[in-house]
Image (cartoon, rainbow, N blue to C red; front, side, top):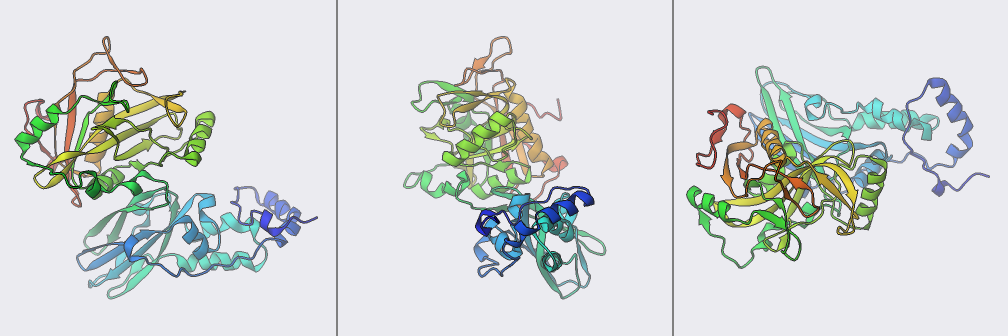
Length: 437
C-alpha cells in the first residue's frame, strides 16, 4: 500500500552516496516517489520587499541585497532549501560605469553552492524530466557574475543557512579597483530577541542627558559592578563592555564581526536547547537567559557559537540612560561559556559554566570588532573590583571568575570600515594604550 502523498517528505535532502547506491535507492522507492507532488515553483508576489532590501551606491555601481525566508525560498524554488541547510540571498547590481563589474561570490560566502550542486541535493525525490526542470530553474534564478556597462543584473546566491540574518559582503571587481559593500541583514522569523527591541520606548518620556567624554568616563565608573538576580539582591557577572552607537550600528558591527542573533525563550527554543545539550549538537542562535541590570533584563543579546552548544561567547546589552556626543550608549556583559549544567533556576532548565578569565572574553569582543573594521576608537574604564584566580568573585551560578576590573569602551565606526592601524585610543587614565606600553 502506498502512503498518502501528504505523509511523504517529497523533497528530502540527498545524502552524498555512490552512484550505484543512488540507483538502487531510486529504483526501490519509485512507487513512493510517484505519490509525491510534482516540482511546482511559483513566483513571489511581494518580492523585492522595499522594507527588507538595503541598497548602497559607490563609483557608479548600486548594489541591493536581501534574504528570503524559508517559506519564500520554498515557494520560489519549488523545494525546501531550509531542509538542506541552504538560504537564498537576493542581489541586484546596477552598473552605471564605463567598465564591467564582476561579482565575487566567494567574498559573499566562501561556502556558497553552485546552482547545479544545490539542485542535485533534491534529485532522489524527483523522477524523469523534473530533475532537468529543477536544474534549469536553479540556473535561471542565479545572479549573473558579470554586469556590463549600463546593465542591471539580479538574481540569487545559495549559501549555508544563517538563522536570524547575517552580514553580507558584496565585492565587485572593476578594471582598476574593487568595490566592497556591506549589509547587515536581519531576517524576522518571530522568535528572535532583536525583533522585540525598540530603543525609543525604553526611556520614553524620560530625559537622556548628553555627556561629553569626561562626563561619560565618570558615568561609566559609577555604574553598578555587575548584573544581578531579578530581585536585585545577588550580584552576578561583571559589567565589562560598553558600545557607543545606534542600535543599527551595534547590530551591524557585531554581525560583521561574526556574532549571531539569539532566539527568545519559548517552548520550542527550550526544547531545542535541551536536545542540543543532551546530544552536544550546535545551536548557533540558542536563547540567552535573562540577567538584570537597571531593573530590567537585557535589551539585546548576541553570541559567537562553536559547533557544540556547550561552548560559545555571549554578550548582553542594555541601553544606558544617557548619551554621548549624540550617540546611544550600550552597557553590557560578555563571558565565554565552556560547559553546561542542569539547573532549576532558569526557564531553559540549563545554564552554562563560564570561563573564569572573563577579561579574555572581553578581549575577544575587541579583537573581533577590530578585525571587522568596526571600531573608530576604544579605551578602558574602571568599574569592577579586581579579583585574582586565587581569590575570585562568583556569579549567580556560583561560577568563579577573575578580572582586572576594567570595562572595554568602544566607539563604533558605523557604516565606515576602519583599518586597525587607523583606530584611535581613548586617552583615559584608567589604562594605557596597549600599543605604547
